[in-house]
Amino acid sequence: MQEIEFRLAGHEVVKVLIDGVLLLDLVREAELPYARYEQLERAEEFAPEPAPLLAGEYSDFLGRFTGWPTRHYLGEPVEVAYNQEDDETMLLGCTCGIAECWALLARIEVTGTQGRWSGFRNNHRDWDLSATLGPFVFSRRQYEEALASTARP
Image 1 (spheres, rainbow, N blue to C red):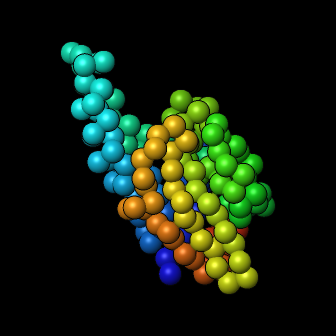
Image 2: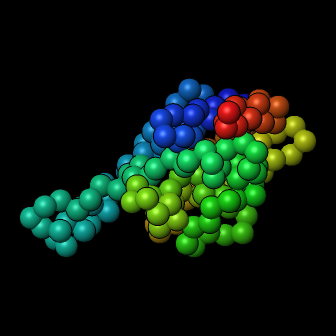
């Protein structure tokens, strides 16, 4: 099992860490091969500048939307992205400030004993992130304690 941490950062942003590593860093690493391939594939379109390298181009959420007591990270999404399936939750949003325009999605399942994140994908790319990212399984007790730490004072 992995350990999850929901860490409040400046401006009430909630950063997610899995086994001490930022989710954003894990995602960037998983997306990098796909983003590099896309960058090469689209080189002519952006010449003479290189095409953007889109790996890990996400933003964390504000705690007032996703922190405790909301049930966003319990599989009842508060924020919804374009092209999001009913059983998916947006974990990271777009850096432009409109979270749903470029999103990292995953399935969150919470049972009596576990929380599980799986099926990671970007809402605009067909990159197979599940091959290198997750699934992540957490103790439900540890998961809920970590999530409760995001409660606004």
